[in-house]
Length: 172
Image 1 (cartoon, rainbow, N blue to C red):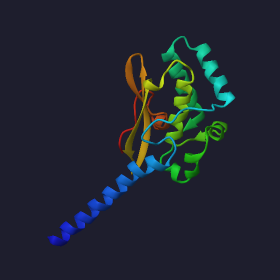
Image 2: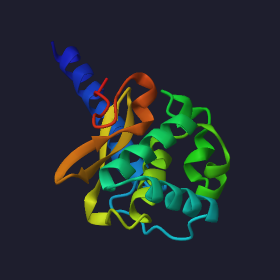
Image 3: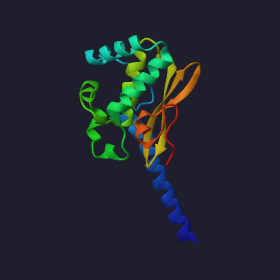
Image 4: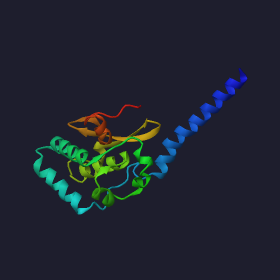
């Protein structure tokens, strides 16, 4: 009985360290994963042109929001556990990521969407909240965006897995 309690104590302790390491450690060391939003600076000209393009075509901020989300999910996608194979993408700047197609880590996906929304002038930083959750034994980031006076979860990284715009990934 004592051995079982000791074993459960060790398992609980290591589980606590594992989860704590992800939720605290990753938010300290990984860009765009922090405890506060980073300022958006130095946006590439090609992104500014795309923002202007979508603003001209959209009749309101909701249409702009959906157009941008559709565009981003057609050019980029998330993929479970791939971040461990391409860990360096977490530390790449927006210019590098914008030139590539395909996989993006959730943090970079969220950062790119924030750039499109805030730099459009249709959304303010106060209209966007960054949220984190535990998914597949790893930390995952998604956004809450205020669209039409209500907060909408946005998890473009999970779109490939059938999670529509306006929903977020489940925990497991």
